[in-house]
Amino acid sequence: MRERQVLPSKVIHPDGTVTEVYPENGEKFQYEELSEFVGGMIETVPYFTKRGEFSVAYCNEEGMILGMEANPVATKMWKDILSKRGGQLLREPRLFGPIFLKAPGC
Image 1: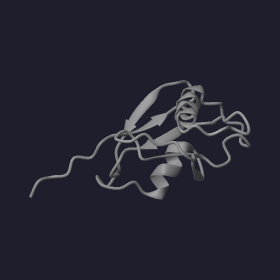
Image 2 (image 1 turned 120 degrees about the vertical axis):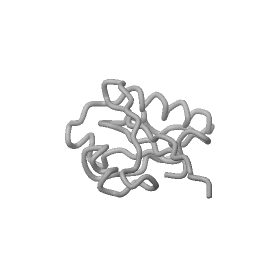
Image 3 (image 1 turned 180 degrees about the horizontal axis):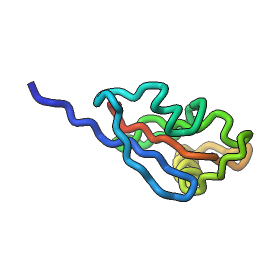
């Protein structure tokens, strides 16, 4: 039986650095891991997906309220994806704190 290759997921930090991460169990991320990556309660970032690279993005649900630093790199990526969808934005989107990008299949 062929062993399944797990692609690295990524955490984009507010300073622009990117860390590759893998599930502790080698297959699927657990809530506790995701919470640790974003520094608290997780929230899905809507429409932040890129086929073949990442299937979902998570941020800290209270990142702005907690005074986490803005994340300009992740915000720009998200805005680029939103603009390609053709929708009109009601307000300027901004992400705060570390952003977790989940690789497909994790």
